[in-house]
Image 1 (cartoon, rainbow, N blue to C red):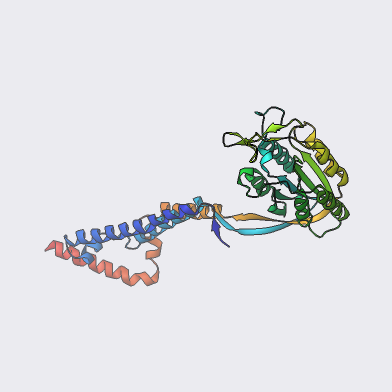
Image 2: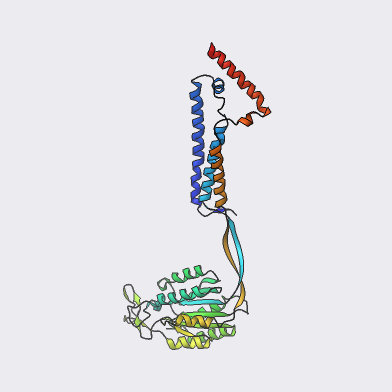
Amino acid sequence: MFSFAYPALLILLLIVPVVALLYIWARWQRKRDLRKFGNLNVISALMPEVSPYKPAIKITLQLLAIVFLILAIARPWGGVKDEKTVKEGIEVVIAMDASNSMLASATESPDGPDRMRTAKLVLEKLINRLDSDRVGLIEYAGAPYTLIPVTNDYVSAKMFLNSIDPSQVAVQGTNISEAINMAVNSFSDNKNIGKAIILITDAEELENAEAVSQSVKEAVKAGIQVDVVGVGSVTPVPIPYNGGYMPDETTGEIVKTALNETMAKQIAKEGKGIYVNASDRTALNDLDSQLSTLKKAAMETSAYSVHDELYAAFGWLAFICILIDFFLLDTKIAWLDKISFFRRDSRMRVSKRTQVRKEVGR
């Protein structure tokens, strides 16, 4: 497959037909002006060294040089190649809580950084450390949604991570059990590779604590470790809403939310993993160390990469055309004129010159 890095620049190729038409018009105009002085055959005999075909060759070389230069700056590629590599790593599925409570402050102060932002910063740094591992991303509130399947495309993973916004989630709640079930089904069938679910939550207002415990046990039975990153403070803080704070639909009082650290630690314990608080400075290192205990296995990964940069070849072609044009003079080639199949033409030119001299002598 042949493609260009900057295909928009190919519009410059319109210069070529414009220049070609201008050249044709100029040659036609030149012949018309020469006819004013007499017969073209007679006039051409008075200019024996002027080549009738060299101008056409030179303009062709010049136009080719322009074409090759435009193609070079458009950066042509020889195609896109699917390169497969084998690396050792693990599989990690991140399940991010996207309920409204994640908009609340991650500290004891209501004006502190929100929980969602704090969690995203920790996870983005964690993804940067997943050198040869695969990562998937799920968001959940009242129901879970797969944002990106297990992949080694970290750029897309971070892009989807930053796109999570609780205010855009229609079904609110904290349905951790369904999120864990979806995460379990997101892993590959390779039983030799270490697998982990990283659950991001404030663990508040769970849909069903018993269902969560059962889902965690099923994950462990499948050989999957469940780690929990708690976000928020154990001190209740209000939830931002429409420039103020979220009111209770029944009483009208301001709703407050707090991290249920007891439940979060219980989930991590049952999941054979660890619990960390996103606000702790050691959270990232602790989580990274825990993941490093998992068994790594060889995984084949595909990476589409551009190959065969061709701009240099087109640049050289343009240079060769310019070089030939520079040394190609408008006069006839003397040694070529001596070749036998030009002799007849030479005698005709001598005859024409003699005829012209006679006419001038008269």
